[in-house]
Amino acid sequence: MIKLFDEIPTLENERLVLQRLYDTDSEELRAFAHDRNVYRCLPTFLFEQKYEDPHLVIQKLYTECFQAKESLILGIFLKDTKAFCGLAEFYGFKDALHKTCIGYRLAEKYWGQGIATETVALMADYLYAQTDTEIMTASTMIENRASARVLEKNGFLLSAATVPEDWGYPRPTIADKWFREKTHDLDYKRA
Image (cartoon, rainbow, N blue to C red; front, side, top):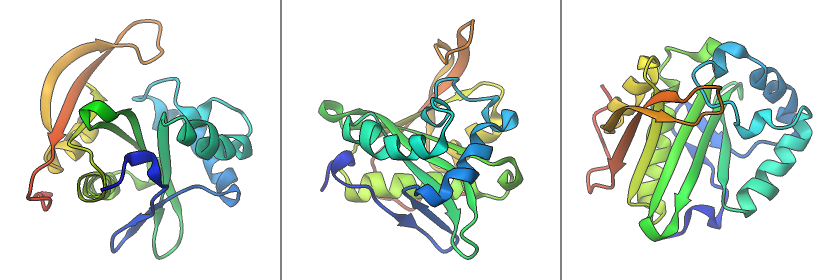
């Protein structure tokens, strides 16, 4: 078993590849990070929005963020066309607790196609089969039922409802908290 930040993995299934971003992905990342619809149900302080220059964002993702063990962000790509679909993030790593938080965000044109569900499945399979993670957590804004459904399809359980959190907005964000423990059966039904 490895620790989460021992490597930058490439995760894939029949349709998707989750992999590190490269400088050649900068223009897609720039457009993505400025899409208000994508970010309306997300915290205001996500790393890809921290700098205006997407080249700098990509560079710092795998130096500043990864090396400090703050965040591991992978691009989500369609395998056949190499199209950039969004971002998958591992963060909030607590080594002593064997706990990792996950997040995901997709470009609007890829919503409703099962990509988020497959992304979370790839993330869970990686964390539980290859790292020493025992518990995964996630948060969703209460109005984001689509994201909640993605988590439910991947075996997450609601651990706390309507919790006020600091997502960088003027008022606390009311969010639902989710968790999934490691099990011996990694093949959850993804209905």
